[in-house]
Image (cartoon, rainbow, N blue to C red; front, side, top):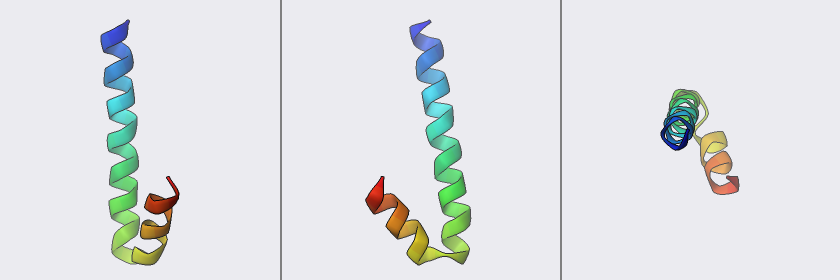
Length: 38
């Protein structure tokens, strides 16, 4: 159970990072704001 939670959490973080990177290409200022907020 512990390993499953870690894998899921890592997957969620990776997906969020991918979304931020994709958005960063078009909206760098918004990405910086979201990163600073989160």
